[in-house]
Image: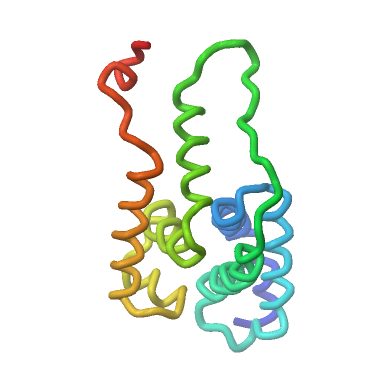
Length: 162
């Protein structure tokens, strides 16, 4: 792709790439930094790229691999509601998000790409530079681990009863 298309590409795909970065790191500020660093790394190679979006995702995942190996010292809190009340949807999302953050780097990346971005096994394997079998096993083990970490709500909870 020519350099002239870089700005157009960024304008067109920024939101989707930022969403992926957020799902990978859990913080809007960190996601913006992650995406900006990935874009800066991609710019010199822009003319030689056949699949820039996949390349950017791969850069973001690789950048985070080193960060995820260090202990996380940030405490993520739920968004405060406008009015007091009990919102099980927020609690479920926060519980799932917390569980997702506890998974290993590649497993988490597979789950985000496969189920949040609705990528095929082949696309996910290509983005991560692994085999389709690795994607399948990471997805299976990751979903099993999430089921362990986030118990299924009871029927009463699902129906809004307490």
